[in-house]
Every structure is written in structure tokens, then in C-alpha cells.
Image (cartoon, rainbow, N blue to C red):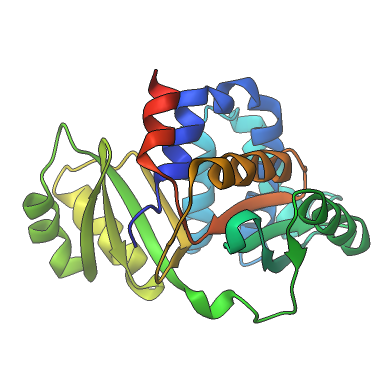
Length: 248
């Protein structure tokens, strides 16, 4: 599972999140719409509760959140969005899973295929790389506030499987079905996570040299610029030299 958070840390260091606030709101709204299809009450819908928490974490206005919920439940028009996952290969032979939410699958697959091809990668058939990843609940905590042992002790009752230190954060992993219980365990203990999501975690990672890592970063940035792309998962381990270069 090593390297899972490095892309998030790279984004943070480059200041990309704040620079794309409007685009982030669009992606969050789609996430809420899809979640609300399972019911508009967050108390009864864990996925919606998580989507709302993530939206509030980036300061998405409450009226936009409410509108997205109503679109998902069908109270308002605009909720005709489907979830799709594209699989393929990127620079350095790394495996990619691209999660998208779209109202036009033909448009989205064409955009993703074009970007992969332009970066020297390729689109693959369904199932070609999915087996390289595990679906997990992933929670991040500040390494300055908490220790691995502390988080593991609290999380065990909630189904936590593994705890890993990664840069300035500590990542906690659990099975998807235990995600709500794990979050509840930390909340009841007064331990606050910096982020929490259901994600695809690579079973093993591919070590990249700096040139290949830079090409992969460029590809991932281009994919993230697509309004339909929600999340990108890779089995790459970004080299420490690149991290140090960006810090400098």
C-alpha cells in the first residue's frame, strides 16, 4: 500500500487544489448526486454522508450541496449521471484506474483515451488492471497529532486492518464494509481525520525513475482537468528525488 498518498501530497505542494476550486465543486456535486441516488437522508445513507463531508471539507457552499442532493433524488433535473471506470496503462507501464461520472460516456471515454495515448499510454479492456488494486476505506491522520500505535489501538474495534506512516500523514485502511464503523470509532475517540474516502489501493507498486514519474504526473494532471474524471488511481511509487525536487 506504500505510495498511496504521495500523489495527494504532490498536489498539495503544487497548490493545485485551491487553484481549481470551481472544478472541485463540480466534481463534488457529481459525487453527491451519485450518492443521493441511494437516498437523500445522510443519516441513512453512509455514502451520501461521506460525500457531503468531503464537500464541506473543501468549503463547498451548503446551497450547492442541497441542490446536488435534490438532483440525485430526482427532485430537480440534472441527475442523469452514470459511474464508469476506465482501465489502462501509463508512462513507465504503471496501471491506471480512472473513475468518472458522466452524462455522456462516449465523450468521456474519447477524452480519456486521447490523453492516455498522448502520454504514451493506452486504454485497456475491463479487468486488465483492476485485479492489481484492492477496494479499501482509507483515512488520513496528521502524523504530528497521532502515532501509528494510537490509531491502530482505536481503530481495531472498528475493523481497521492496517496503519502506515506516509510522509507527514498516517494512513489507516479497512474493508469497505467496515468503513462507517471505523470512522465512528475515531469520532467517538475524538480523533479527527484530515480525509476519509473509499479508494482503490494498489496491492504492489511500480518504482519509477524521475523522467517517467514526471510524465505520469503530467498525465494525471491532464486527466484531473476533465470535468468527468472523479478519481485516478495508479500503482506507481513516486521517487523520493522528485519529492525533494518539488520541495526545493
